[in-house]
Image 1 (cartoon, rainbow, N blue to C red):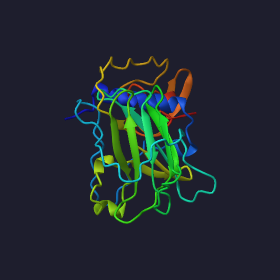
Image 2: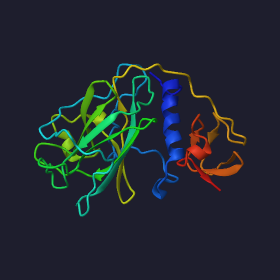
Image 3: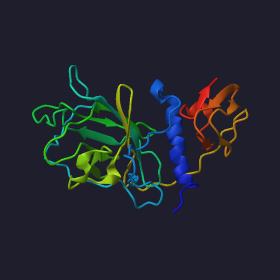
Length: 269
């Protein structure tokens, strides 16, 4: 099914752009595309986690494993002074079945350290947080190490207010052990790239939460030459709200991709 023009997919795009407009954008991301899966030459792209477009494809669950501990501290960063490992930032959204954000959703993360060991006495590399009104979350941690029998992964529990808990795991692309791990699921691959002095990953959770799709996004008047639906090439210039912008990435303009809201697509000049 072609979802290119789906209002639900457009709503998701608008939400992403709105968050980008209100958050600080690292210099490494200026002029860069959205995160893309890292694939070896000749690899076919694995299927993404199901899009929230038809009401029957929530993010797949996975086993909890033996190392979960309740009562983790509330924190968005699991880093501690002197902690070895490669810095990892994971960001994304929590959506319901109609592709609308879920505010106040609980995300509880736990993982192995750089040597593949879990802290079972304290709460090192364990923590929980809640999504904001836009359904967004950001986790700062390290890339987990390997241990026998498993590929590299993060554990997470996600729960919308007063709804059942989704227990699942997130995986890294291009890991050799993905092919031998018996519970690895390619639908749970994060998008990952190098950047920011470490690695940057992204993943959107879709919970089994019924939602009213709500109205389609209303296009915002530009007050300039930027035009919704126009096709732009690298180097094209437009004006928007009294400022000039240069196109950084070829694209077809959509609602929510106005130049001030899309720093990966446009640079002020």
